[in-house]
Length: 194
Image (cartoon, rainbow, N blue to C red):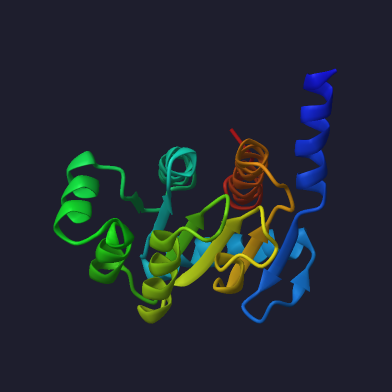
């Protein structure tokens, strides 16, 4: 009983995903995936840029996972802030709020994509990462959940919001959507998903 209810809740979140542009206008999920994929292809083929993924906790592991998958399978240069030395040094020497924005400020430009993953959408370091990414001209994509009025959801050029209330459910839904975005890219540009 619990398992079926849990899976039903995740599916409800995925099925009720809300995607918006930088002005908060809703769009169909297919249109959002097409926009992301077209931008990612331009980053790879024309701009010679990269995709920067970031998140905290479980979202950090998703960021690392997606960074690797886009790098290996889609042939796009990617990066993330996963190194223990970086995380601890920036947190100690500056602040944890700067753990992503410090690197973003140094390496991102208008050639690049920034993908933030945050269950609450309100983590101060994610919000600062988005502020810095926008300042650097990167195309910003956000993943969030929980409160519909979260900060991240209002900051991206493209926003994926899952209307679920607990961290585990939001994280599970985010994993499905993140994989769907990559698999769509592989279907569209790489001869099929792996």
